[in-house]
Length: 126
View (cartoon, helix red, strand yellow):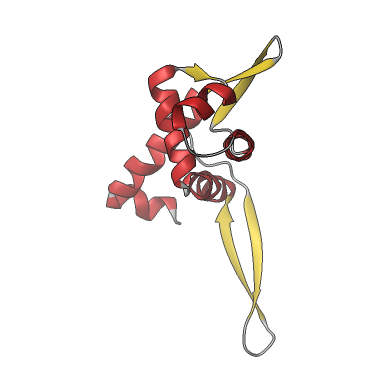
């Protein structure tokens, strides 16, 4: 599977002299960074772990099981996970059932495997 989207994003940053440096990252690297930034919260990791065990759950069920974060707090974390594509929500009557997005988790697994392999890591950052 070809992982190169062929797109480059330009990020500008100012230096001490007012000049700009250009940093080029592939869209895949930016997307991978977004996924890992989204996962960088203990509550979101707990949500992911719960969905691994239960296949799908509603925010109300998670609120009862977690016995800590409020329903509004969990809803906010679910929104972040959904925006990053890590989970999906299916409306059933008046509730939304959340589940893991399998395709994205294959990408996460690929990134972690690639980072663990020095040869592929060099190619990833070229």
